Amino acid sequence: MVTMALAWFAFGVLTGLWLSFGALTGHIAQHKNIGFGVGCLLGLLLGPIGTVLVLVMRSGLRKCPHCDEEVKPRATICKHCGRELTPMVERVAADKSAGRVERTIGFVLIGILLVTIIGLSIATYAGYL
Ligand SMILES: [Zn+2]
Image (tube, rainbow, N blue to C red):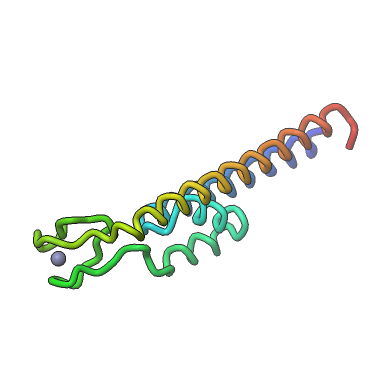
């Protein structure tokens, strides 16, 4: 019984770590303007590899034509040099809807994962497995 409890504890810790990788990768991806859902997906599917992948990914940011620093696509003023920029309006709308879809996919995947883990735990406790 002790080994079983230990195994479940290890499983719980590993699952928590894995979910953290998903959340962390999603967070990084959001910062790089790639999309929270995409990052979450990569983090959950690939773990640390997904995190590294997002870190080396090209960001969804664009370059300021005046100072060559990265700024958000919808920015009207460069945060680095303070000069005026033309916002990319068409791309912003597309990015927004894409981001929403990605986020939904991410949350659905996390939900499925959690339900599976909880279901397996209950089934094991009840003695079905
Ligand atoms: Zn600039």
